[in-house]
Image (cartoon, rainbow, N blue to C red; front, side, top):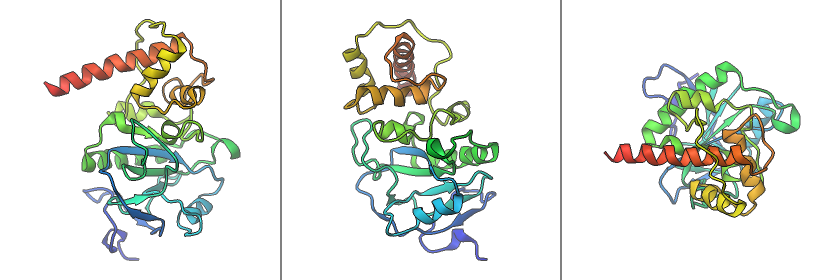
Length: 251
């Protein structure tokens, strides 16, 4: 079997080549209209990996992703990173509505909430870590812009869900961490919380859904869509930490 990284149109997934990436091209892509800014993580929401791969490469389905990681850690690339995969659907984050053009999409095999949602196995997460690190380096993606499907489509999607180990990515500086210590509850009314959440990046057209998505990302043990003191404190602390980080980066 030829090395899939040598196939026409394929982009190598890791510079040092220590990890083999399979190549199963999907016809479901087109040209980008925006530079890559985000990395969006999904779960397949299907019980069988082969069925998920078949759908992501089926021209009739009109969906795809750049990469697919099976539960045993095997990585398959379906769309070249220079191209626009069709993974995010109707979505918005940080004012950008064409998330597909502005992102790399990674699908993780997991049956999802409908078919028996379960934790993501260690081999799968380990391979995700090195793939995310390589993609971030290639496209200079900020860790604040490594997000989940539910973050960009809170009214429609739940993935990768409350069992996804965002803390692992954060420990590798590949995503924002939930703050270890929370500042005081700022006491915002719901409208002010919504504006703060929108400034952070979320589409707040459906504020309850956006709140659930935020909790699914940063308060995974209690996802209810209720704007309570802890949720406000988490968002406030994240805002303060991000401002400090950006100020430090500016020197």
